[in-house]
Amino acid sequence: MANELFSEDTVYHTSKTTLEEIFDEVAADLLEKGLVNDGFLENLKSRERDYPTAMDMTPLGKDIPNISVPHTEPEFVEGTRLVPIKLEHPVIAHNMIQPTQEVEVGYLFLILNKDPNRQVNILAQIMDFFNRNSEEDLKAFLAMDDPKQIVDFLQGQFR
Amino acid sequence: MIKVLAACGAGVNSSHQIKEAIEAEMKKRGYDVHADAAMIKDVNQDKLSGYDIYAQIAATDFSFDPEIPVIDAGAILYRIPAMAKPVYDKIESIIQEKGLA
Image 1 (tube, rainbow over the protein chains, first blue to last red):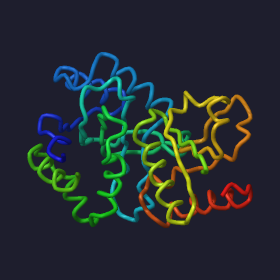
Image 2: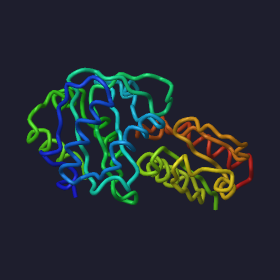
Image 3: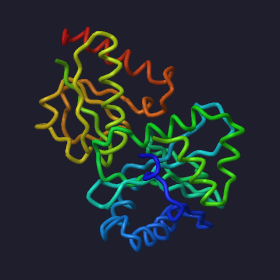
Image 4: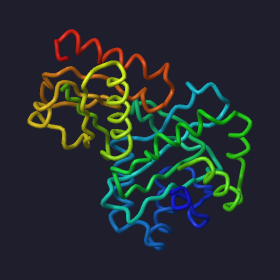
């Protein structure tokens, strides 16, 4: 299953400085690739606005950036995939658990999930990934730029 | 059977994770708990009336009185046992208090 979750052509590195612009940029490419449909971008933005997805990574006790895990309702995607988006500059997002709290994030894991009953919960796996790996290994991963290297690394870590 | 409703924004990832975690842990503790995942926007008085406990990730802005205990389950998302434990303890104490078991 893991080799369906990642693909080199859906690994991104953006220099945009707001979530909205990043969503615009990535969604356009995903739409072109047929991985999402027309309603995706709007739902992604409105969902992030109403129910933000930043995770404050402080409790993990590692010197790593905070992440966001944006996603939409299943009807707006055409497949299941985990899309790593490396951020050149930190971006302001809001805490999933405390939506009024601003959180600066350094990496996004965009979740395309067509099947809500999918056994292997993607969000749970993302957190396990961060919990399980050492700060050193995580920093090495977060610094990666080559899509092939990123995909090879992640494939071994997710089901 | 004790029924828990877990809700999140898209009704897909977070609420499913909460649902599965609560069911597994409460089963370990000896309780028959069944949880459902839902989208916050679909949570109304009618829907809640079928449940004993409402588990939220972020504070839900109810326009009505939920009438069932509301717990903050967001900490479960971290997958760190020490953070999730207080949530499970809270569920357990509600089960005891209300004689739901």
